[in-house]
Image (cartoon, rainbow, N blue to C red):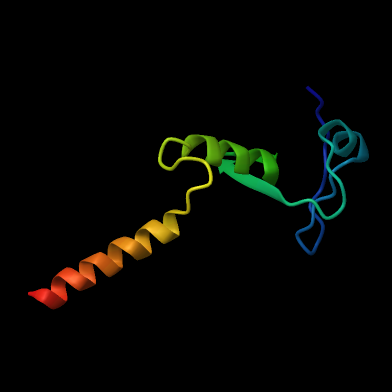
Length: 85
């Protein structure tokens, strides 16, 4: 584990030292996710967080399934049933 000390600039910016950017393969333009936990701040790569979320919800829908289409189909079916009543 590498520890670096940084200061927050007047505009709220934090510069991630180049040694950490190399170690974590962070490149200009990458999106990072900041997670606060009490007095700690965790910086994570967006792609890794996305993979974790997708993995957590893998059981909800099979690969390639579009839940939005299923939701629309359910709403249409519900509207059809209500119009019959």
